[in-house]
Amino acid sequence: MSIRKLDWSPLDLDRDPVHADLDVVHEAQKRYQKIATTIDDAVDKLEKIVDSGSEALVGKYVQGLKKDAGSIKESLDKAGVRYHDVANEIGKYEPDLKHGLDETAAARTDAEEAEGAQKKAKAMPDPQKDDDGEISSEEKDKGTAKDKAATDADGKMTAAKNRLHNAVDALNVAGKRFGDAVNCKKYEDGLTDSTQDKIDAVLKKIGKIFGIIGMILGVLAILIPGVNVLVLAGVAAGVVSLVASSVLYAHGKGSIVDVVLGAVGLGLAGLGGIASVVGKGISNAAKNAAIFGKGRPGPVTTGGGNNIEMVTLGAGGRGVPNFSRPFGPGNTFRPVPNFSRPLGPGNSFRPLGTPGNAATNWKNMTEWFNNPAVNWALGKGGFVTPGTGFWSSAGSQFKDVGKFWAMLKSDPTKFGKDFTGILTGIQGARDLSAIVQAANLGKISPLWYVWGGVNGAFGMGGLIYGGGRQMGWIPDVNPPGVVAT
Image (tube, rainbow, N blue to C red; front, side):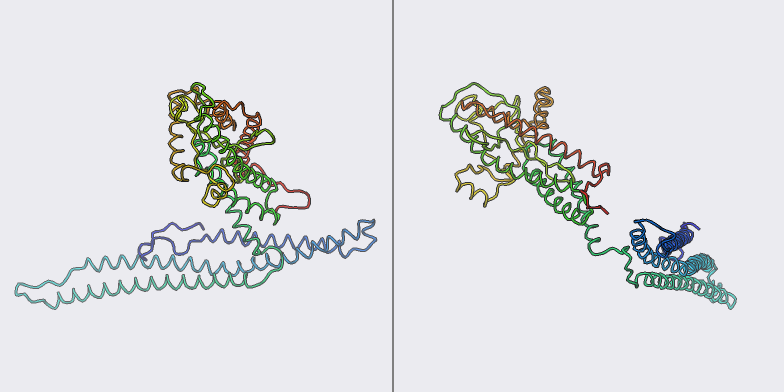
């Protein structure tokens, strides 16, 4: 018997009141019974091992084998009870289900007949008056017959609906009895989900959702580079992902790779914030040097823009860049460059004071880590704080992205070079180099390019890893002693 596809409108229903397949339920009963029987057979075999004497089993392994066999037998015994109970209760429920299906089908048939009777009664002639305006006894009998037919038809319809409701109510009682019989027992067989299991299930769902969000942010960060709103969203997604991955791993249901890469990604994001703070000071110094005439080179064309973020590295003021963009294994944050800010056709900087000097046009924009508290602390430390607010900066960044993509049509070769620089993580170093050289402050350290390249590779690798995890191509990785379940 398959799911019934019938018209239930005679009973004022738009679908089957009992959506069940008796054959499927019966197959489930047979499957549970087979599992229970298989468990019984396994228990019997283990019983023989446990009860066997030394003449049947010899060697140093005997005691260990008996101990393990006894432990497995005990676990199977407990599991077998549950499967026997379920199989028995399904067997009790099947007749009730069949009766419910039969009764509701019969109620539907009764309703169809009642509906036909109602139509016939309605079609019967009404009593007619004669020429004198009187209704003869014969005509009165016609009216009486029509009223009786309509009443009888309505009664049949009411009886059909009552039959349906009674059948459904009885089936609900049987279903509750079935559920209570199985759920009332507290089976100590390890097959019941614990509170921890339920929490883990929720965390897996959260991890999957934020994994998808992280993938979307990763793609958007490639297509819309250098926008602080996307970076902030990536950091938030990374935090949620790392928490979920860490808890799942602690429960033996996650992957150590997710935890490690998530922690490294967030750590690099933090280092990127430090890099950006100090780098803004470097860029501001270059701007001031150019404005006050310490360097007067000609026009400088760069691949990205004026939103440069660096950090000093060791003696001599050498620096490394901040490359922040969301990517990631299981939506964790993955750093890649965050300073591609095209400034128009040809991407040439247009100075404020010294014609053609790239350094003078650098702008200190707000980034994802900037907020009143942090900026107050930066100001106390003598660092450069943002000149524009978070959302104003974001709006400017989005406009610059539009100019960047417009270059695809006006100068595709230049666009390709710049886009490659963004993907590989070296665009920020190029931009800083242009500003520093424009101010006659020498060359930046090659470590800028190394830092950018490493982060770019880490970001792309994280995007690939995250996709592989979402598709199930990359399994959990756990160290010895931790078994994912």
